[in-house]
Amino acid sequence: MKTPLEILTSHFGHKSFRGFQAEIIDRTLAGRNSLVIMPTGGGKSVCFQIPAVLLYNESTPDPERSLQSKRPITVVMSPLIALMKDQTDGLQARGINATFVNSSLNRRERELRYKAIMEGHHSLLYVTPERFRKADFLDVIARRDVRLLAVDEAHCISEWGHDFRPDYTRLAEYRERLGNPVTIALTATATPEVQADIIRQLGLEPSEIEIFHEGIDRPNLELHVEDVWDTDEKQASVERVLHRWISTSTSGSGIVYFTLIRTLEDFSERLQAEGIDHVCYHGDLDRRVRRSIQDDFMKGRCRLVLATNAFGMGIDKEDIRFVVHADVPGSMESYYQEIGRAGRDGLPAECLLLYDQRDLNTQIEFIRWSNPDADFYQRTYSHLVHDQEKVRAFGIDWLRERLCDRQRHDRRVETVLSMLQRYGVIEDENDLSGVTIMGPLPESLADESERAAKLLRDQKKLYALVQYVQTTDDRKGFIHQYFGVRRHSRID
Image (cartoon, rainbow, N blue to C red; front, side):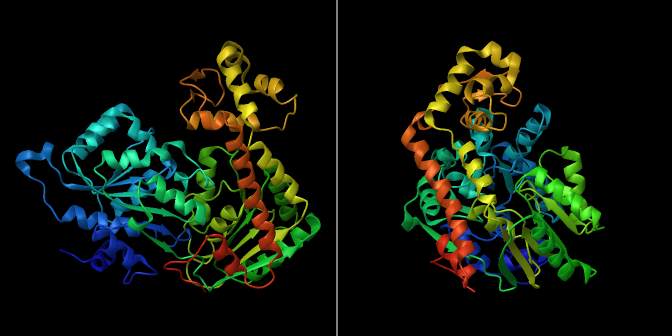
């Protein structure tokens, strides 16, 4: 039987583990649970992929009883459908038999994968938590010995987190269906409150899980904040960064983040006028165009990208020399994830936040839009139920006129529709032409005290970012304190 280090070398091409990887892997193989909080690009996936290979290889399938084979399998629960194919393709290229099942597959493809899983193939299976609603999936996975459950993007478990997914609240139930396997939960960001909620939602006691928190354990990252007063000053600051890292070097790349698409496009015109080569990436672009831009950036064909926070998933590029926030981010969580993309090769890199106090107004408005009160949820749901024909015929603009006093830029309706879809209350929320009501309004969305608490949490996240800006000495220390780096911590 190979050792974890031998698997790391033979399948992943690395000669040594970094950080807490080896300790986490040993703990997992010993049958003990872990919560891993590690910066984006820090190597979280290896912590469950190597145990998955070793567990799978410890037994051989029985050719006489292939369909009843209980060969070990690792189930990876991930919310990121868009990345599952890339992740499994990457593992297969390394000689690891991984697969995924999600809504992108047609019926025939799904049935073929289910058959392969039942026959004992695949050491790793990537699924979304919503897949556990499907009876056919539950029947298939019951044929395998699920030794390990890996919960990726584990902050989605917690309503305290910044990307809450209601199906994650049923995780303890799903673990029980799988036979309560050893569990490893992984995320790049989790405050102490989120950490406690993750453990609770897993159905575990704090004594049953070890927390590994690396914080920002990269001395090569320089964190800076500059006060700016207008777009001209922002442009001058960005161009100074470009001169330091791109104009004087033949390698390396950088990202400049913006909050609004229109601000990004205005800034792009300014850089074009200066003859500065770059590309723009945001959520309104066609999916194929976004993929092409990302591919050009990852392969070094374009060294500078102006982007909204839509540019993030799948960005694991070692030579990003700088990350500039031209606008104030909406939370410490977002900021922390985005600066984590810089300097993954261990060489010097710069993270610059340009602070214009006027940007706070935009984020305050976003917080208001993303936190409708209980009355707004109830009124929206009432229109969907009682005016369904009109909603289907006239769409979201008709709803907005009745709910937002004709305020064209108010996005509370979009928030409500997205949350109702996440909770499984409606289907086809995009253009509403075929919207179907699947259930009642959840009590939590109709509870004003819960809505007010959620609003306050989001406001505190933005306030924490302002406090970070005002910190003049140990910025990494501030981040460590915010995210509760304590046990198994590595502080620069």
